[in-house]
Image (cartoon, rainbow, N blue to C red):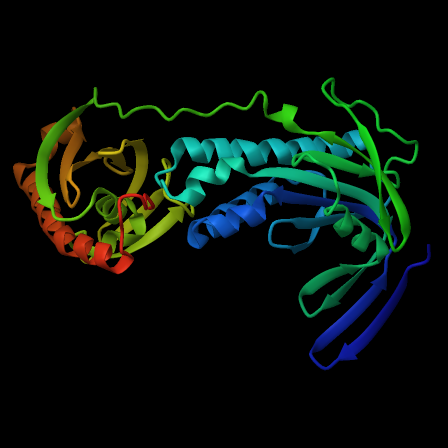
Length: 383
């Protein structure tokens, strides 16, 4: 088909319309999104969805282009001859497994006990694949797709398939009818949907079996065998368990109570979990990178550890509920056996102990303020 280019100047920018060739439309959609967002805390549900969408984008290995992100879905496309169904399936498999591996990993490493974080594992994925004719156009730096087959693909998201995790293939992409059994677990079902362009016939298969061999990557417990205790500090607070945990465990809040910290730079992760990293910058120019290395949660006890990247020092936080509004925090500061224990001066250790002691005193005021501002209660186990 001859490529026609129309260039026009418009009031709000430069508009270029290209009458397209045919191409693949690849539309992964997060199932359960609406209920998840409506029933959970907006802040963390937003970050969870954002991370999952990025997982899908990073799993793109088929040269797909992104037209737009549509809340809970990504409109991928690729102009050119139709790909083989085996090629499309490999892309579906890659995205589906990456999506669920990320959810499993997050559930196994998350700090947060809020409704959004606890229920994220119920989310899943369906993928609509279609082949048809559409056009792309630019308005300034935005690229959009239009055409009847784009409309068809979107309408196929609103189908009567009772399942919530499946791969849908239209007959335009599989013109010979039922697709081949690309995996031994596949069972294809046939259906059709009415559209302005007429009946759209399609086949679909469940993707649930792709989760069978996904296993959590269990984080190891803190290894103290090569550490020695440098000092231990304990303080009681007139706040509930969760707000004290929120204050101490959230890297972004460190500058509010950690003595001499002027700012915190988040190095990775949107949500608190094992493996998150930050850099604390102190008022004397010192920079210390912390990595969350372990976490354990019970109703009346929370334990988590952090490692200092440059020294190997480890900070062990233990938060214990004494009563409804009475909590105890213990900080155990460990240093590596060997060179640090031999060569660090008593003065250096005294300096670190004084810094943490003052930090725990600062935490008293900050944690109370945080609890008052956030109106925390015991069943709002959020971080």
